[in-house]
Picture 1 (cartoon, rainbow, N blue to C red):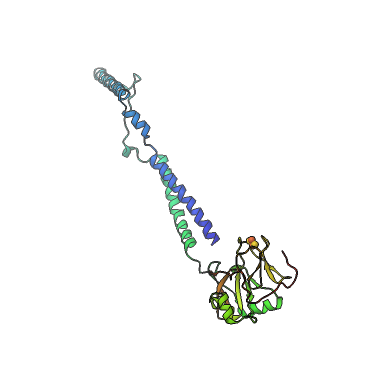
Picture 2 (cartoon, helix red, strand yellow):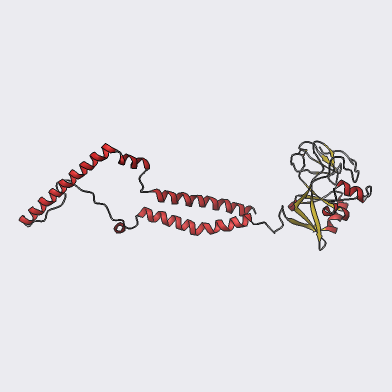
Length: 284
Ligand code: FES
């Protein structure tokens, strides 16, 4: 996803460059609005026209005199030898494409042909939902039986970094199924509670810090403002407004799949389905 985002940004820069160059090219050789309005203004324009007409007649007279001399003397005469040079407009078709125009067009064509397809592909890759199992979609975190065995042996939750999730055993021996359903508003099956586990999002519900596991207290303790949660993410202390949020889960071919696209809000303050007390010194 990150490389796709970089390509998309790079492509956007190239697109802006192409558009800017094209605009500059298309405006070159045009008169500004101010120049046009000055040309149209009365007295200055009239006097300039009069001067040009006078110059035209002088040139015509000079050419006639030269032609007459040439006819009489038989010696060819140079036009403009009196120092008066007249500007003749150049036919664009005769002139063809100027060097600057050619380079501008070549630059635009090369950038367009070379970069626009890359930009298009990158944009599509960036916008298209990823099916590769990154955060925000379904993430397979491992074999469920192995994960539960690891949690029991190490006495700590299984951390799945790709899902930003702690997997923890849900042991509700002290609570009835009805009480669990009431506390979790009927979404306990979606979470995996009846199957004995829960997937907790690592993000603190207070202001979003990552909440680490405290091995000595067997609680999650947030270092930012001191919120504390039981080992299954139920709120115990601090400013957090509820328990840790969790994700929907499913088991596919024995593998635990955490759907990080479906967030289930943590249980309200006061929920104590496992009634776990602090088991040792706090970390925060
Ligand atoms: S962010 Fe965790 S307690 Fe404030």
